[in-house]
Image (cartoon, rainbow, N blue to C red; front, top):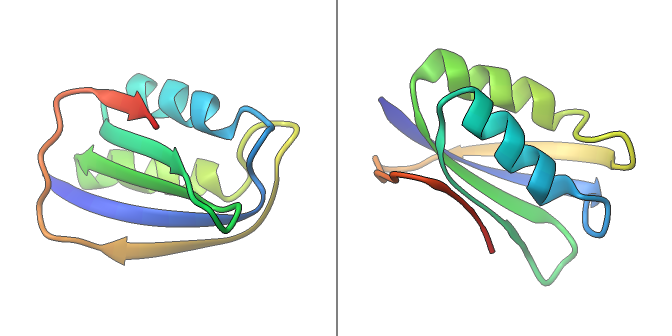
Length: 88
């Protein structure tokens, strides 16, 4: 199990990005959160199996239909353990 942090930039606020991220993460058995940041990006922190995190990372590259993702930056973080997936 590991934790990863992603910063997603582009048109990612006001398009259901966090909601759809939670759906994808939950489907993959991941835990953590998705949060809007003041600079109009979205922070996604996840905890789970590496393969499932990789699948979510791939999905984040496109996001939901109304989103226009410009860049996804992954930052490996120390193991942070979560037991649900929240939207902030």
